[in-house]
Image (cartoon, rainbow, N blue to C red; front, side, top):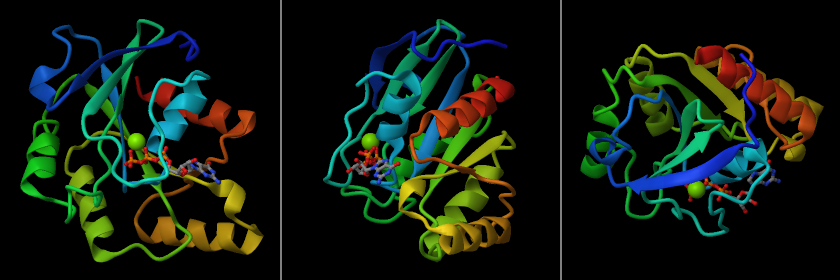
Length: 188
Ligand SMILES: Nc1nc2c(ncn2[C@@H]2O[C@H](COP(=O)(O)OP(=O)(O)OP(=O)(O)O)[C@@H](O)[C@H]2O)c(=O)[nH]1
Ligand SMILES: [Mg+2]
């Protein structure tokens, strides 16, 4: 399926899934710890400055719906572990995610990871929790431009340890974006 990611526009910021657009367009959710690079990846995938990126953690507070090529919504989510989401599964965040658990329009989750360090227990719990959704998960290691060969190898081992085989490495280059666009298209 050919999808033109450059044909993208912001549609709505929703405080929860119940405020999403009232249509039946499928969606792909981007999740990850605060500051991992969710908004930056959305901007890079679409080649537009759609999502706000920030130096300060916890910038994205709402579910931001971006319509891609009139085909699906790419949804920027608040980073867990960010300001206002002190612990990963705070009531607000978990109830937002909970609504997604059996949501038929959710076609998959792009899980952004910083694997320069071992993940904490809360990250591992969060990943286990996402898996209970039973939807495809596309693992993406962000900020790959900051990894050397040894770090990359270590990151692959860490991902495998989490049951995430063959993660994509994103350095926001054309090559990595091409791969990630392909992975997203394949789950739609
Ligand atoms: N070196 C490098 N920096 C990146 C990359 N992607 C994002 N960043 C930087 O990481 C910081 C956080 O990026 P955001 O895209 O705002 O992260 P976020 O996950 O949307 O953060 P929240 O909205 O706070 O949850 C910014 O300073 C970005 O410039 C990357 O591929 N390489
Ligand atoms: Mg963001």
